[in-house]
Image 1 (cartoon, rainbow, N blue to C red):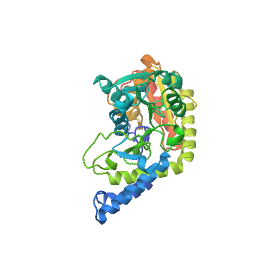
Image 2 (image 1 turned 60 degrees about the vertical axis):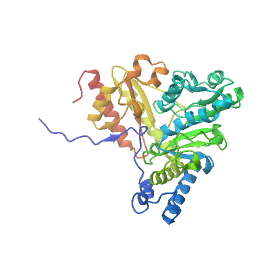
Image 3 (image 1 turned 45 degrees about the vertical axis):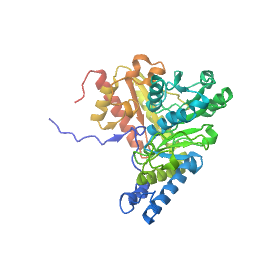
Image 4 (image 1 turned 90 degrees about the vertical axis):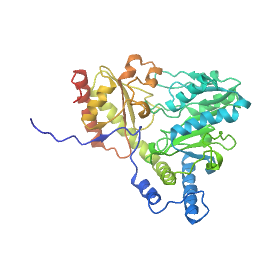
Length: 393
């Protein structure tokens, strides 16, 4: 049997996590080696750590279009989403009400949390539907708002199909209906790809994660507008001005700050190149694969994210064959990829049984044109194998 060398691996799962940018690695490395102070300590080591933390907070704030004092560092986007929902409900529920409004296409960190609060009797919940492109109508959101609505949460950019929501219009519609309702957006996928500005978006709270923007895993932030800080969900030493206790992950936060600054500096260039490469990849696949249907909004979408349903292919089989051919891809959210269940996002968009045939190819800063061409061919081969009943292996 002829021995063939393994195919050069191609990473097309940047919506799940991005590689650490070399510039970010260089910034955080000293804090994994010679620098090790606790930011709460008063001595020199602690003061240096505190200064590094403050500098990183300034960098994240600049990228998010907010004041530094409005940035609360967390362990990632999931904790930020939880802090937004649970913290707002706890802080403002007695005054404003216990009704939450979310959309059907939210990340599970929002959906599962909101449903859990409702099931526990701590909140009432309304879930707003989307259209076939995954778009949320601001009028439908406004119609769901009640006098006792304490928080509305609609994500800025969907992690599975790439649809970008008109968050400013949604926020304005919510405030016109109930000026006391707070608005949160999960902007985890948007950093470095879309312009971010707390005021321009019209929201009160905004979630971020470093590892979606070439920073380290395990660190994120909730941006909370001055005056609407949520109740702390992790208590103890009173770090983060009492909003999130626990010794700060200094190396991670320094990396997050460097990644945020780099993401903002490169945003327009990266977004343009990602849009070009994603458009090219989509065209190549549509030309070579009948039964392939792009998903999400074709115009107002996240740069670099290609999403499809592939008729005649189950996602788990297609991804296994792609992995054999050296292509790292996904069917949707990495947080639930271990479960062989159809995408809740595609189900909400009306794809029915096809929700179990999803393919997400998400490109990144280091993706090349040669990789796009090679990936298109490997996807074509993989789809043909699955449709012909050739099992992985």
